[in-house]
Image 1 (cartoon, rainbow, N blue to C red):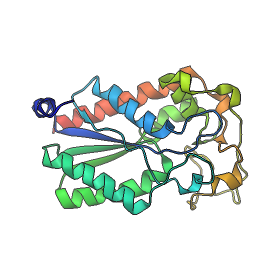
Image 2: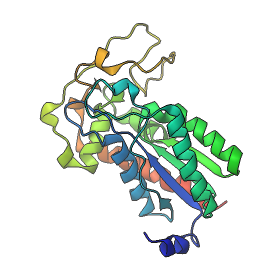
Image 3: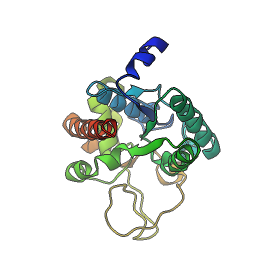
Image 4: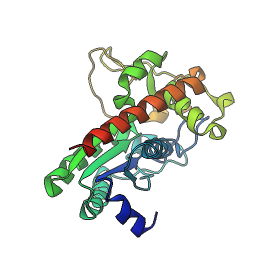
Length: 243
C-alpha cells in the first residue's frame, strides 16, 4: 500500500488494526512465527470484508518465559509498550482515531492493556485490545477438548487452517504440566475459580515447549475458530465505523 492509497482509504474508514504476536518456540511441530502470523492473517481476512487499515505485524513480544528454547526473541515490557504507542500515535496523526490491537500471544495481554490505556489518555483515540481466544471464547469452549495454553489443540488447529505447510503434526506431543494448586490452571479457557501467577519458565514445566494437546488439532477446528474470530472482528469494525 502506497501513501496515496492510505490517503484514499481514509475516506472510507478511521479504523486501523495493529496485529501483535511474538517470535518464540511453539513446540516441536509449529514455527517460531506462529503468534505474529496468526494475528496478521486474521486481521487481513477481516480487511477483506470491511474497510480497515492493517499495519505490518509486530513480530516481537514479552517472551522471556520461552527464552530457554533456541530461536525465541523477547523484548522488555516497557519496550513493547513504547513500540505499540509509537505505532498507534502515528496512525492517530494520520486520521485513524479508532485503533484495534489484535493480539495472539498470551504473554502480551496485560502489557498491551497498559499500552492501550496510555494511548487513549495521550491521544483520546478509541483503543480496543482483542485477544483472538477471548473474542471467540464461546466458540473455543464448544470446540476444545483439552487445555488451551501454548502450541495446543486450538493454536495448532488455527495454524493448520491458515498455513498447513508450516505444521508438522508427526512431531506433535501432548504435555500438560501438573499445577501446584487447584486454583492454578494451565488453560486460558478454564472457567473455574483461579489465581493468576507469574509466567512459568516453560522449559522447566515442558521439555517440548508444548502446554496442551496438539495431537487433537484439526483443520476443521481451526477453520471454525478462524471464521468466528473474523466474523467478530468484522462486527466490531462495522460498529465502530457507525459511530
